[in-house]
Amino acid sequence: MSTAQEEREQRRQLRQKQEEERLEKLCEFEKQYPDCELICGIDEVGRGPLAGPVVAGAVILPRGVRILHINDSKKLSEKRRNELFEVIAERAVRWSVASSSPKRIDEINILQADYEAMQKAIRRLGVTPDLILADAVTIPGVSIRQNGIVHGDALVQPIAAASIMAKVTRDRYMTAVDRLYPEYSFASNKGYGTAAHIAALKKYGPCPIHRMTFIQKFIGEQD
Image (tube, rainbow, N blue to C red; front, top):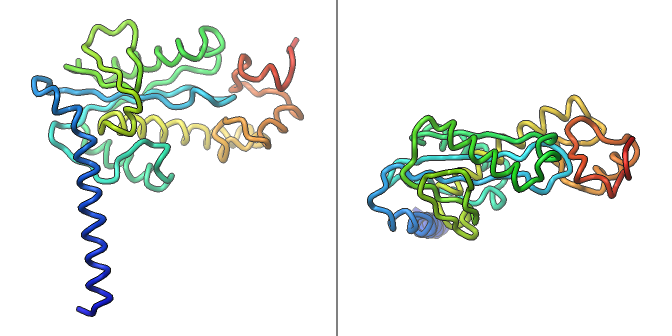
């Protein structure tokens, strides 16, 4: 092996070691609950967009599993998220996603719609977790033991997994719905308020998946 090859291999091994150490830190919270076999991570995506649903993910991973490169979905490339989606789906004990529609968001506000999506995702697991680890919230109406961890999607492996499942599901939906409403470029902006999206909104008005309570300042009161 040449010196250059040796150096590349050393760098590869160093990156591997660093990733393994980072991943081990993501599992520290779970180690605090040795009595809990089924630990469910839960997270949501889509609070901020002007259009589309809010989506919650719930994931139960086997105790002791380590999934390389898992992280907060916002910190991953689309390619990496899609790859991890498949790995998580294959290795999870149970996983689910659920959403609240734009109409529901308008009816009860984004926070309550967010909670509803999380509650539905938990029910869809088909089993009752021993513990829920959520990203910075305590989910109302859920009797299961909970711990809300600030920045949990970047600190706790099952929450990061839930973040990925929710993000990929929502992004795929917004890409699909782009074919129905191409003028808003949902495939690229995923419903967020980019300059081009806002310009299209002002030109064409809202479509059925816009959140009316989010867009009034751009379109004014509608009849």
